[in-house]
Image (cartoon, rainbow, N blue to C red):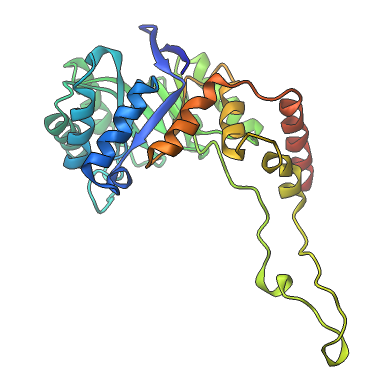
Length: 302
């Protein structure tokens, strides 16, 4: 694992942030704890609570109780997924209750980054922002973050009210997204990337994939369904020896020095180990150039 400076304190944060939520409990409590212990052993010191669900918070707190609290960074998603129904709630009362619930069941003491998940342009009242600032003043939360990929994020970045930006960012990130990341860094915001990988393989449509036959059912060899030029542009992702396509995309995003950490999801130790090994690997020679060429081709085909 490798580390980068995070926040004004200059604390070191791992290149990868493990997202931990209800799906992480699919293999039971012990399976979730094993996943977290494997992440710690791999050097991951950054975690994101996808929800303030009591069980999720308790399991994460139990795993992190074995390390110095000051050495790990924990973020909490607010505004959506604060309960099992995933209801949206950006009210001061709702977000304060979610933070209190997560702290109570996890025993973590404080939340390093309270993250507002995709708030709309008029969805965040000033009273809610004031409540979060009050919680920060008391030390229950350390930093404020905002997550999303819509144009409204430009407005939230420009306010100067947030310390962290969580943004989708992949190998084909457009100029608007890159400019937003640049603007965030100019505001001294730390940047976390998510949605770093999209499966770009073409999938044949049923009507086109079926074999076509001539008169009386004879002749007419099966035809290969047409693939989009955008998918072809990144076909090399699936033909690189010893490199899964997802690992290539993750490694490429990590080459951007403006990204503090990339958020990953893994519900089993095998997948976690594959992703955790990626920051230590260098992309094969010429692959970065292929990605840039693919971006140009995909842009022309759009």
